[in-house]
Length: 306
Image 1 (tube, rainbow, N blue to C red):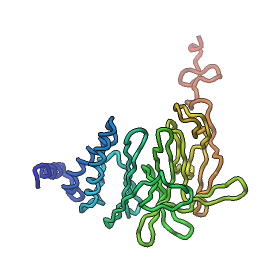
Image 2: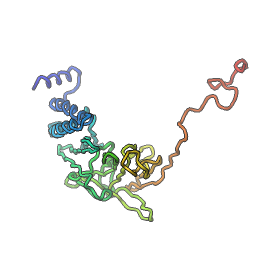
Image 3: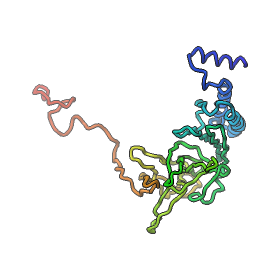
């Protein structure tokens, strides 16, 4: 045991923290990972970000293969998305690296509680049937996931709904809702027909996922609203881009569509009753149109009227 690790253990003891879950080697390797992650996300030059990425990825893989890694929080890796279901059966890691000229690379790992690790290989640019195709870990639609929800199909199959973002190019981003499930052999797959949309001809079809491409300089909402019990999605319309050279693109128009769970299927709702405000909300004025009130809303005395 080197001096640095011994000092870390001593500090934990002095602070009264338990050593269980604080694997000394993981504590040390996490410090290196945090440094590389910060550089690969925040460095101003692409060559520095790429170099940090090339150091981070194998080191993170090494860390996850160490004893106790599944229960280790890695909470100093602020730029890495870590999602886990309620039963804590697996962890899903995802991250992105801006490699320059509007290009991003995406990385993902699924670590099961038994220690099995699946590397996710991004193949988004080569996918052709985004709505209906099923993908494996080898042709993953790379994204950084910002939310995970749990659900079941009509036949009781467990799945995990993943909300993610992907920087498509310098002009457009993509937000998607994908479905992760595990086969009987325990292998991860993406895509299940749980989304229903009306096609305008009286027919409706089921889709494996939802994919929304929009202007890179815009903000788009795609997330679950627990208060309304809906997946809320900004409605997109075609507009001329403000980015030189892009042409037409999709932007939010200020209205929303939604997806509501009905009999184990997420059905599209074309219009959500959200009343737009003409002005910002403010408290009701104490001094209103009625005369004779003072600053606190009380009736003025005769002397106050003078």
